Amino acid sequence: MWSRRLDLISVVVLLAVLATTALSGLLADYLGVPRSLYHRLSAYSLVLMALLHVWLRRRQLWRRIGAEVGRHQGPVSRPERVPNTPREQPHPATPSRRMLLISGVGAAAAFVLGRWWQPGKVPSELVGTDPGLSYHQRSKPDLWGIVQRPFQWGELPPLYKYYPSARRIRLPGESGYRGIPVEEAIRRRRSIRDYSGDPMTMEQLSLLLHSASGITEPAYPLRASPSAGALYPVETYPVVNSVTGLATGVYHYRPGDHSLELIREGDFRSDLLKYTGGQDMVLQASVVLVLTAVFQRTRWKYQERAYRYVLLDAGHLGENLYLAATSLGLGPCGIGAFFDDEMNRLVGVDGDEEAAVYLVSIGRLG
Ligand SMILES: Cc1cc2nc3c(=O)[nH]c(=O)nc-3n(C[C@H](O)[C@H](O)[C@H](O)COP(=O)(O)O)c2cc1C
Image 1: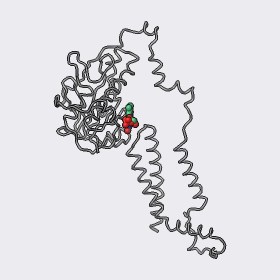
Image 2: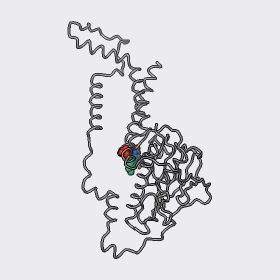
Image 3: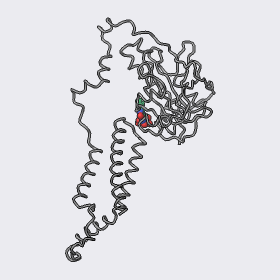
Image 4: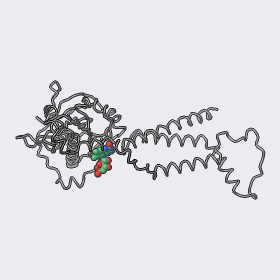
């Protein structure tokens, strides 16, 4: 009796896990996430539940296989058919040949569809509804637009952001560290998603931040990454998981005096995991750098082209971080797939004036 109940429960759980695996797979596909902890866990659970299911039905399965083998051994060896007694009635859930055939064909079709089926090309009439394309077209310069356009869009906001009431942590200055040649860093650079989970040092964090947005030419001042019009719209918020001598929490980087401001203390690993759709490298990373953009800094001057420039600026910071991390023997990974509103809330920006545009996780190699 209990085994039948267990059997029924296993079927219900199996179906639930199947649905979760399908949904988490669709989510990972939709976000373009190469690895999702949620999908992996449901897939493992699915395998476990399928094994349990087969184990619970092992007797019927053996009986069925035995009967099939016997039937194919021909009339000589075929055992005499005895009418079923009530005890010998096949289990109602014994898989019939038709069921097995349908399951086999279904599994093969799902495999073929998943592996080779490509959804058709986007119909040309839909291309116009791609907001990226319509933005791209509408932000092209045209002569009449140039004549008509106002001199500037609004005011230039401050180029530096400060949190006056936040606790400030000075970062170590020039450490004399000299890494590998840039050609070597370019050759070695890879997106790394497996980290040891060990903490990085303050010196390493300091070098990373300086390589992305540190001031390298104090006279103007100009920074490590290029920026359209030297307007530097990108702010950096390190979410610290494990850096020696630094409390875990959300920080803000101040390029002006190369220091950090503590915005929120606490362990935000599970938030990072959720908001990146289960990309579990954020759990073992020493730090996840959330790059935001203050759009008005660039919009003021470049108007409708500003959004292009802001993202290009963020990309420059991202590559500098990749190369600096590689040179320091650390593993970087760019993350474009994240839930915007939640990530904005995590670092405390409103999502309109300032919004998260790119993340880079960095950790010690595993
Ligand atoms: C804009 C951008 C967004 C990316 N987003 C993700 C992401 O969300 N998750 C991830 O694992 N990798 C992400 N990557 C890393 C790419 O998958 C990776 O660069 C690509 O597979 C090439 O591998 P490589 O960087 O090792 O050469 C992103 C890279 C870029 C440039």
